[in-house]
Amino acid sequence: MQEKLEVLEQEILRLKGESVSTIKNSVGPLLEEVYEEIKKEKIEDIPTLLKLSQLENLLSIRMIDASPKIEPASASDSFKAIEQLVFYTRNQASSKLGVNVVEDSLRTRSKDFSLLLLENARNLGIPATMIDLEITFSFPYPHYVVLAYVEEFYLLDLTYQEFFLLGYNFPNRYYPHPTFLRVCEIGGRMMGEREHTAREMIENGYLKVASKEFQEYGDACLEFGGKEEKFPYFEEMMKQIERSSEKSDRILLSKMHNL
Image 1 (cartoon, one colour):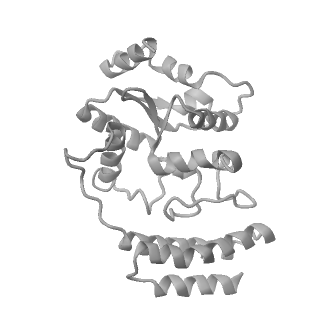
Image 2: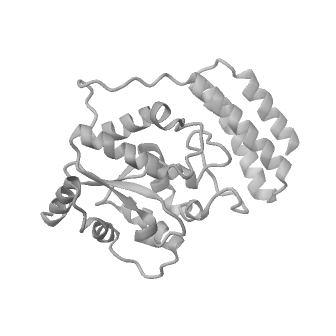
């Protein structure tokens, strides 16, 4: 394993200044070999895992340096409104929240991102409200998401990657560590058949409520919360805002009742 990590380190160092595609094509196979051996040999020693985490952080720097800078969307861009909402919020994360959505850990930041989503939703004229999954699914701690309506309902979760990433965030890469020491409970439950849903939420930042993916997202949350019987997740979320006096919340409720 040490030899593989040394090869990986030398390759990452060599790729300074290269393009994103070059970095991915060169480092990707080496990373997969390392991950496969960790899984196969059930490697658990802290120095090895720490070294891997350090290399992933270095790789993050290479990827960020090589990535094109994000420019604000203009009125002429043909983004859907929900995509605009996610785009603006992620783009403002550095200046308004002091975080980098690619490099930094987003743990404990779900409420900050949700409040920024709501601010941008108001600016875009999108009805939206914040939901606490601790209430919906009996989580052992709060995790906030946003429910929005743009011709149909969407669930937005911009910090979902916190449940999957090893160490600091190598862009959207996650894997089932054999001991699950570095992958939290929800992350473990989204592996296998549900992995496509995890990737969609992490990459896009949202799921359509009327979709199989939303059901899978809810199922994993339900299991994490320790509830045994499934229930209608969307309706449970709506119950949280039934007594709200917020105008946007009343609009959301009216949209639901008109379905």
